[in-house]
Length: 296
Image (cartoon, rainbow, N blue to C red):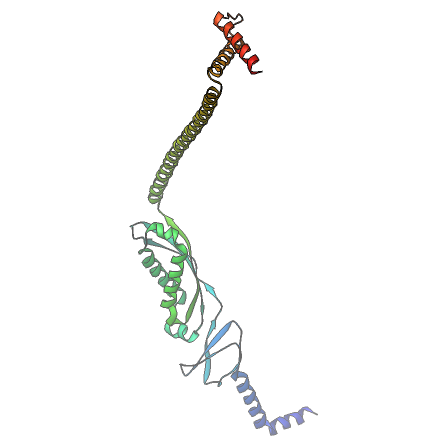
C-alpha cells in the first residue's frame, strides 16, 4: 500500500479514527489503579464524589478528578518533649511518641489541614492534663496506666479527623537537677532508715533467740532435777523397803558402803598422794565386810 493510498484511507475514515481515539482516551482517563497502601479522594466540580480503594476503579473522565492521594500506612510522629507539672508541684519534662494511621481520608482531607501538627498539639495538651492529676511517684510507678489513658484520650480527640491512634509511648520522664538532688537525699535517708530498722530487727531477734535458749536450758535443767529427784526417791524407797525387810542391819550396811565410796573418791584424787585412814574408816571396812559375809 502506497503512501498516497494510506493518506486517502485516513482521509476517508478520519471521523471513525477520531471517535476511536476519543473512546480510547475516555477509557484511559476513566480507569484508575490505586496501590494497596493508598486511598484516593475523588472530586467532581470541587465537591467530594467518592474515595477509591486499592485496586482498579472507574471514574467519569473530565468530570471526576483525583484530588488527594492519601497513604494509609502507619505513621510515627517525631518524638516530642513538653514540660508538665505534677499534682505535687514538681516540674517534669516528658518525651512522647505517637503512631497513627488514616482510616477515613475524606475526613482527614476536609476537616484538618496539618495532621501531624494537630496530633502533636493534642498529645501535648493531654499529657500535661493527665500528669497534672498525678503525683511524681505515681507518674513513675504507673507509667503503663498513664500511657493507656493518654492513648484513649488522644483517640477520642482525633476520631473526627478519620485517624486511628495505634500506639502512644511515654519514652522518658526527666527532672531538673534540684529535684534530682532532693530525691537522692530522700532515697539516702530512706536507705539509712531501712538499715536501722533491719539492725533493730536483728537485735530483737537475737534477744528473742537468747531468751528462747535460756528458757530451753532452764526447762532441761528442771527436767534433769526432776529425774534426779525421781531417782533419789526411788533409791530412798528401795532403802526404806530394805530396812523394813532386814531391820537395822540393812541401814548400817548402806552407811558403811557410803563411807567406803567416800574413801575411794578421796584416794582417786590427783592432789593427794598419801591417804590417812582414820580408825573409824577401818571399822567401817570391817563392818561392811562382815555384812557382806552375812548376806553371802
